[in-house]
Amino acid sequence: MVEVIVKEMPERPKPGEKIQLPNGQTVRVRHVGIPWILPPKKVCNDPECPWHGHLKVRGQVFTVTVEKVHGKSAVVIHQWLHYDPKYKRYERRRRKMHVRVPPCIDVKPGDTVYIAETRPLAKTIKHVVIGKVEDTVEVKPEVIRLGQ
Ligand SMILES: [Zn+2]
Image (tube, rainbow, N blue to C red; front, side, top):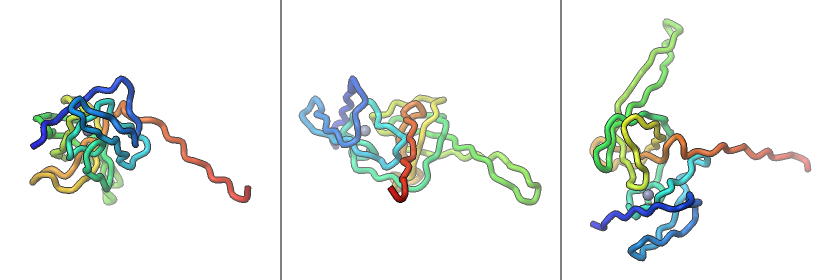
């Protein structure tokens, strides 16, 4: 088991950048594939980190509220509206989920975070936190001009 090292950067690293940790290890910041979520300010050497390890994300991205954090996992609440065609109304649905928290992202109860699906990491954990709400940037869609 490797010791987890977290290094705080003065500036937010860009995807593709290589950062050297205090123990001499070099970590490359990956891109998780969601253009509007920025990499965290901290860099870790956890292999099960979507930004600095080799954990791939897939499927939908949910915006959830953190309820409890214990160590490298957390309990989050996902709320959504479900349409009932019989009554032509929406009903509120909620579900608690167990998620993995990488050591480079600090979460506390009450935070709003983005989670994405990954491979099953434990019996009930198959989602990972990929960023906080403030770690986003507005992405303008590129306009492709035809015939020019
Ligand atoms: Zn990390």
